[in-house]
Image 1: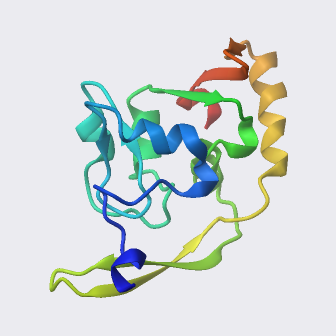
Image 2: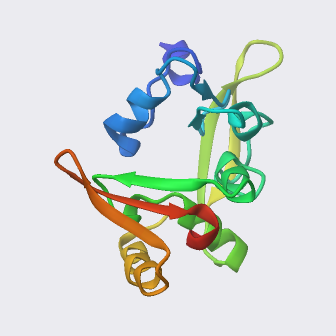
Length: 162
């Protein structure tokens, strides 16, 4: 129905493209989730500052949760995935002046309670070449890697990614 198209931070699952870890994380006790469809979740003393604020467009702009993690000198943990899934690189694209945008929209609930469409341009494209970040970050000694269970993990400062 109509309500299924409108994001609800208390019940809407994470974007399937983000995977099972992201969908489980926002449900953890103490986790805070942004109140807009570009859902981001955080835990810890800066969680509210990271996920608060209005809906950013595009979703990975400097004033988004991704930008706030970078600004707070936070880290990116890639668990079982590589930099092709690293949304922090979309922030780097925007700040670097990437010229490409695809028309997108989300449906949100307006102040009057009715669904409304918000159109925006997003740097949405094939992220295959994001894998090059592994080499750059390894060469700089900026990325830690190792096994976590059966997954390969990467841990890197968001500032170093950008």
